[in-house]
Length: 226
Image (cartoon, rainbow, N blue to C red; front, top):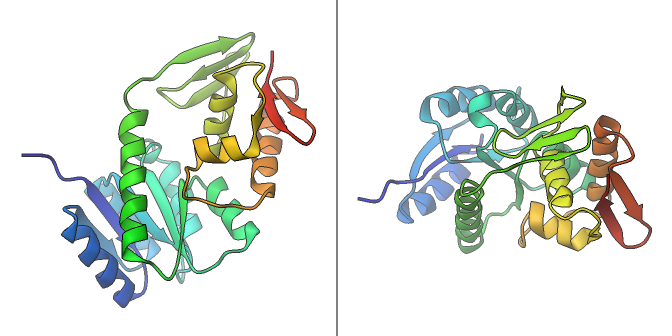
């Protein structure tokens, strides 16, 4: 029998929890629900889901805080986390991704869109597990399997999206990646975010690894060089 993939839903609105849980169970997923951030953290640790659907706007502990907390735990560094929210401002999206989120699903939730996104996210996770590598570029070392970056053998702390962008650029040194290509490779086809998102992430990466590894081609995109 095929093993069921596990989804944790964290949302403070009972109607939304019931609606999403119904559609997920109908598609064959094993589902657990939590009604607030604190409960979501406890259930995540016990349930060990493959995917977490996380509402942003919750009282006491919001989704961004929950995501940041989860990403600080080794067991959840590779867990797919998708935010659910009715807010569409650029700063909300940037904060979501900088906390370690993988996707951004807008409310009101449409069942077919949600199921398509869930399948795509879980498929991407499975694909990501197939092959992991470590590469060295002068004094910079990138370990894909452990999601670690070292500069002069000193570990650097990058968010998940920062790591994925750096890894993508480093796979083809010298190649210029435009913004659309980076969005597609790192965030997926179904996600649209503001133009500043890439710039913010690149700036953060440069602050950590230095300016010399990532070059800007004005009006085009970015490339990795060493």
